[in-house]
Image 1: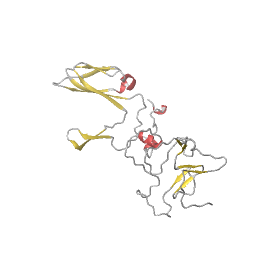
Image 2: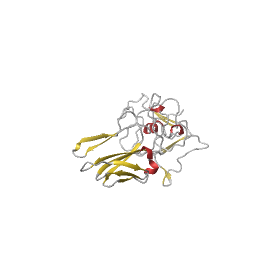
Image 3: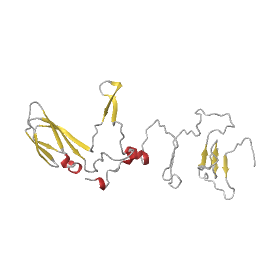
Image 4: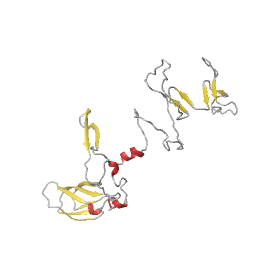
Length: 252
């Protein structure tokens, strides 16, 4: 095995001589190769990686023979610049182009879809409150405001407003969104006592009687998805029997 203490050269090619398999031949500085080009045909091991080649490039930390310690102790790879990963879906990790065994910390924004366990977690709420949190609209910086969602045993929607007429016109899409028989109405007289009653309703309007001026809330249950299975047997949320809300066994 040839040994050398230092090597100064414009380009290093590691691989067979015949046939020469140099994938860098089209990467040129004008009509010549870039100084410092490295082309390797076989697997590459850098640092204290295991003795199994899990990839073509295998990077570990210091093997203990050098005194060098990186500024971020234990960091095997540091990249300053953009990174592009294009998976081919043919390896042991399937369609997953990137597998990270450990936690991930990101200081910037992330734009992505979700799948697998993350998607399953997005698709269901746990027992914690579902809040929104914002800077306090009145007190400003240094103060926060937090509200949480109202919860109930249905996938419900509402429509509210004020009327001085005996008719509440529903949004035109409610006919395709809401189970009409699930509709309930609450009214609150404004200015004076009023003997308000709900006379009838359909998928387009609610007819009242006795209105002078009132606020109203109209509630209904969505019909584009199955109703909630409020109580079911199981040990975790993963045991919910109709996770996509479309199982015919749980339809109305």
